[in-house]
Length: 407
Image (cartoon, rainbow, N blue to C red; front, side, top):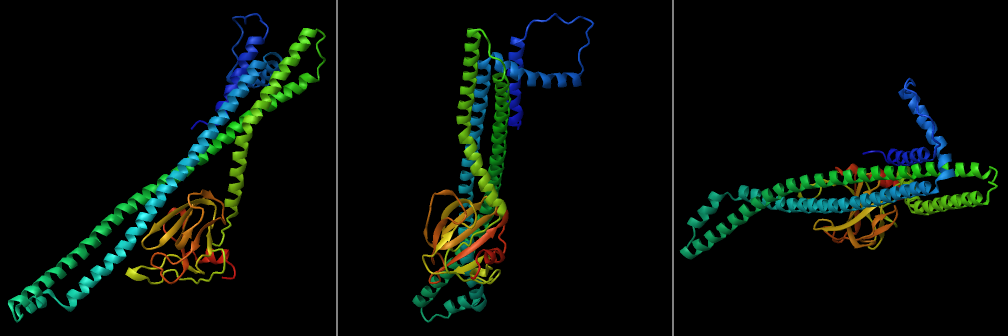
């Protein structure tokens, strides 16, 4: 990607040089024996030419100055639009990532259920082998009794086969969804990197405009200190030229204001991210202990921290980022926060949502309420996870304990 500063600086430098050549007095052609300046000499001459020609341009061609300022303002507007579009792409990528995360969680729950069913099949086969069941049919006292027992045996066999098939299907689906989640995660990371690049282009365009404006204002200040022309027409032309240039600078400044505001907001957001402050996910009385790795149903191990609190206690975004609300069979009402710091935060078992569809939120913004939805019936709490870089979860207890003093 070509740096925006080089593009816009070169653009106005070419305008300056062209204007200078158009307004410079004619001179005698160089003699045949005159040596062509070397590369270093040309570089020095070009630098000097640009510095000198800004003065000449301001003194002779207000239209060229205004045109260059317009070009620079257009460049800023285009870069601002590109930056906003990149941010919209980040939001869309995060929404797709939330869909993938939610589908993966749903399949994990299905695997747990089907694993329990298949385990029961194995246990039942061990306790009552198929051969013994067949002997029961043969030992039936009547044909009707034997028929009933055979039908029951067939039904058990069908259920057993279905349980094992369901487990295999769920495992296969999990593999596909895990690949889709990885793809969505990579797409979200790419979108965030693109947004960072667009912000750099915007900053470069703003810097290029500021550089040119300073050059023009310096030239104006120098000329205002010069003795005014004695000829009334020349004096009027000079005043008109200066007025046009000042009007063009004012217009450029107005066009720049929105982009500056966007950049200032982005810088403020970055400072918060760099501070590394995490809010306590539960905004109220809460208690929790380190239960990372504890056994759970279906052979699972606990991959979060269970934050016990009264139903309806607000839950907040632990960091600034984009919030997406999704529900699953296992967790019930849930939220994902795709943090500006690149990490993903997950909270579930909510009783309700807050700021649903808000998109980007600051750290500490209410995004839901503690509840017992999903498989937490009767035990209101927030199950909270931290996924560095959007990958596998880590034990959230140390960071959560530090963010929730007195828990």
